[in-house]
Image 1 (cartoon, rainbow, N blue to C red):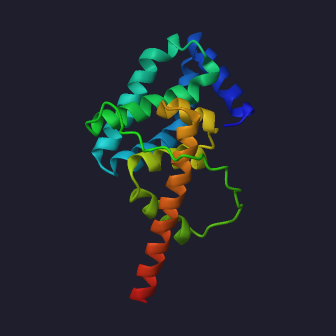
Image 2 (tube, one colour; image 1 turned 45 degrees about the horizontal axis):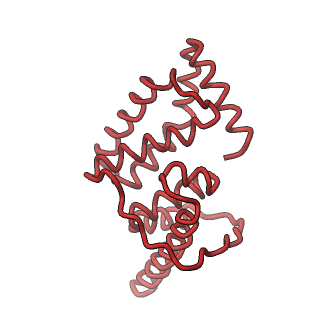
Image 3 (spheres, rainbow, N blue to C red; image 1 turned 60 degrees about the horizontal axis):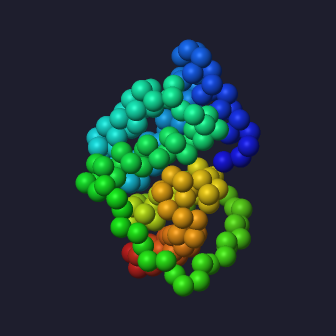
Length: 187
């Protein structure tokens, strides 16, 4: 998340805290679809994800007036969403993945355009990953959060986040390769 988005969110939170209801509407407009995507990745495409989304916004409405660090709104919001999803999954805490002995360095990002079909395949393969892998990939690459912000949302240290992202990308790559092989066999 870049500085401009953090500033925009901070201003909207401060406006809301000074009784500007329009600011809340803008925050909902900015984050509703993105939160729905994350919750559906964690809970599936059913009513459970939609109910969790409603719970998130109710909690935001009840507590946004008391948010002390407006610049941390996005991390706070995604933390609420994540906790709601895990509560619905029947877990109070997720089971941490074992950390590797050496933390992998960031892999270079390759910018490229995806067709609608390729994007749909990526989303489908993403759904097959564990919730821990899905959440870090969505937060890091779809929500463009820094490693530090992801660590705050998932409540673990930075090294663990780097490790999870590394192993999540590896798992996604394996899913994509398996999907590609299945498609070739059926052709």
